[in-house]
Length: 379
Ligand code: C2E
Ligand code: MG
Ligand code: MG
Image 1 (tube, rainbow, N blue to C red):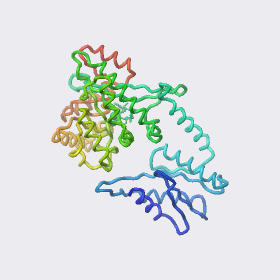
Image 2 (cartoon, helix red, strand yellow):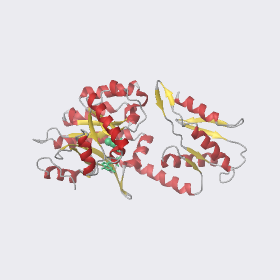
Image 3 (cartoon, helix red, strand yellow):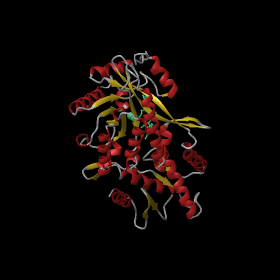
Image 4 (cartoon, rainbow, N blue to C red):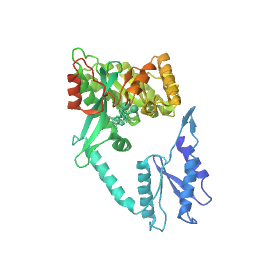
């Protein structure tokens, strides 16, 4: 239904004699013959984007679509149909990688760019087998005293030529190619193994938090992967927390809900990551077995100076309390932010103030060093 609605919106921006058709997946092609000039193509594209400003309503949920658009013009640079298509695709690819809702007109420079991103994809496909992925760990702490109660596992790609690459640059491509499923499985297994190793006397309840992407839910392979990781290692399920973003719940489909309940039955904890910045409705908090809300970094950043932000964080904490959910504040960078959050009643935190994501050995060094399990907050 989203596709039908999208097609309708595209069509409403076209003239008689223009053509739009779906090329597959979530992609549409639009043919605009006999334009007055190349600028007209851009004008039509902007018009199409504007028509997606209003959300779609599907089953009572509001869904925003953010179209990325690539444009190629005949005969300026594209000399035949095949080239026109190839150039439009290159521009589209570039638009997508720049971020959503972008519009890119094909130019010569894009060709080198496309070649580079193709190499990038080829490299990414080999990265798992070549053992180029690493997990970094960032401490989760009790603000009072700074005791570490767990860690969030964060993926890094150690590229043989380009060095350490951050997830924002390659996770979208992992998702697009479906590689997130095997890579995500590796992350869960590796993190579970590590967490078991950390369970020492006095530290039996070290928690490990792992991010999972929507695509892993749709694959249907997530629950078996989690079960296997727990069984192989004999890790108590309650030590593992999975972080999902609200976008994984969009449309709140049965498949996702069923898997969340299955995970909950295994005893795994579930957290909503980046809470507060999604578009989805809050009703899922009633029907889904969520344990914890992770307050998005963008709210924490503006504390305590910004009064509106303080109100929002206060409201999130009140909501969590009445629904008996835990709250972890993300991205705490200053002692002032930490202090303010504590006055609001938020005890669990994560952020550069307490520790950056560290490679395994450095994280463990700090963990063992802090004899009583306390990490000193940087001043
Ligand atoms: P996230 O799950 O919200 O992770 C928190 C991000 O905030 C991390 O970025 C972390 O380094 C950063 N951060 C933590 N504390 C602070 C702070 O005090 N200040 C600032 N400015 N930043 C802070 P990172 O490691 O680059 O990860 C980015 C995102 O990539 C993660 O956001 C998560 O959504 C995704 N991601 C990471 N690892 C995985 C994974 O294994 N699987 C999946 N599906 N996604 C992952
Ligand atoms: Mg996370
Ligand atoms: Mg987050």
